[in-house]
Length: 460
Ligand code: ADP
Ligand code: MG
Image (tube, protein in one colour):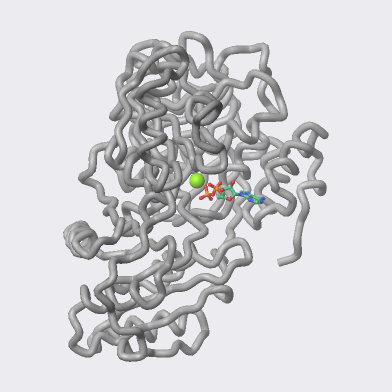
């Protein structure tokens, strides 16, 4: 695919400049195919997968159409889950930096509705959220979509899987007939065709087949030959010692077992599955992304749509049946020009899966023996570089990342370079600090103030 720079597009200078500052020079394939149509105001039905850069593909046009002086909601993005909504809103806010004062609000279920009503009262140019909650807010007369002229359905197939068909159509019926509707979906089941028929006007279709190139990924397959899977996993981890790993299992129960097994061996590992409440889920993801945990164990469903990339290794504890799922899983490693590592365990009876995977990528895959790997030693695994502190205050307390950084550093504080990722949620904030400095950082926070107040702080 030939490279297409953003400068090929008729974008205002301020937008170009902001894209450059975000490090966006070349469009991703989905952006190169969608943006010219989206900027012309056409409806679009786009087939694209996670990690393809969809958010910018629909947000650039949407942002250019906003009139900042009108505080009415002018753009609506429907997403399947709260996490995806949060990710999309974050990306839209970054892309919106070329203009002043664009307000982006997320409205999702599983969270108190009161504060959401409050935030809408001040106006919101862009609303991002899940269909159910948005429908509630329309019913309560708290959200007016009568001037909402851009509508986006992100991961539409997933929204249909979750049973949102009626809600989606219900919500969109409150927007003007004359609007732009952009529909993004990884697959094209009948429900999607129906949605498009009901909601779109002469849409342009674009498809981006290729996901990630796997050429940068070192793929290794280990025959179990009677070794217990748990032992094989320990052996692989002990040998490669990856700093960040996602382990894929086919079931939730398996994820929980693997997490227990690894923690018992001293690994900093946590499972991500549907039964976690939202707060625990956020916590698991934060601790992995900020390098306080080195292993995340997940099912495909739990990991879908999450922006976890740049992993050193992906391990298939269970091989997926579908080679496309396999390629999608391993595509989370080997990004940004770095070599990735994909390690898979399989039983004799699963050789047919290996063949399908090999055929799908037109590659011959080497099968290796576990016995070539270093024996597991009794030493404990290397600890992750960072440790997380949880602060019992967040955005609703007007805490911003800079406030936390300020409270930790300064006179007799810890060095700014020892502070890692800071994540601020509505009611809680997490900050990663170098592991050896966790107690000092904790002391600093509990004895000091953030935004003039004292907050409870825990070391996780
Ligand atoms: P999707 O919604 O398709 O899963 P996202 O929109 O979340 O993908 O983008 C995935 C990642 O790629 C994000 O971290 C985003 O900031 C980054 N990204 C998107 N477009 C570009 C680009 N043109 N150049 C560099 N990075 C990009
Ligand atoms: Mg997305």
